[in-house]
Amino acid sequence: MNYKKLTTGIIVAWFIFALSASALHLFQNNANRIGLAVAIAAATPIIVFSLWYAASAGFRQFALSLDPRSLTSAQAGRILGFTFVLLEVRGILPAVFAWPAGYGDMAIGATAGFVAWKLADPAHRNSFILWQVIGILDLVNAVGVGTTAFLISPQAPPMVPMTVLPLSLIPTFLVPLFLIFHVISIAQARTWKSSSERARQTATPVQHPAI
Image (cartoon, rainbow, N blue to C red; front, side, top):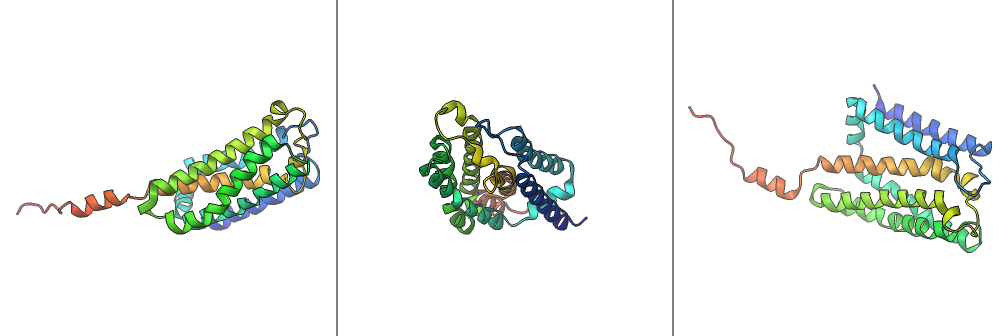
């Protein structure tokens, strides 16, 4: 099975679905919260990936063969988190969401290139994994704050802009995609041998059978 073509097709179809559903206002929620439709759209690809990864050795092997530098470099797109901050300044998004989500994404996006260049190798395995975990926590925090913003700050601007184009593509497409990239990168790094482990293996003499 050609997993590269298959996964590329799935990602393209997923993007088209998110874009079309957004254009049809299927995600729009005027009740000052993200809403069930967005939650389902965001969770479905993550669940599908998790089940596929766990059940298919072939897909798991394909995922682990992807270039960790490319997966990490893709996170540089999160530098666009400054958009949240700009929209908060204009009174379009609530500060309780825009500040942590915006600055968190900017921090990940700004450091993604360096991490891909310097840390995506066995010698820096722990630092690489730590950065990926921080990236996941940033996404989880943004989602958590976004879904509870109306409770934390009821007088603030509503979260409606995050349920319509173009911002609706963030929770329904980009967030789960970035999360999956983080998970794959961590799974890859866990298979790397640290420098100390490699040194021990090198130092261990080869045992020859007695003649």
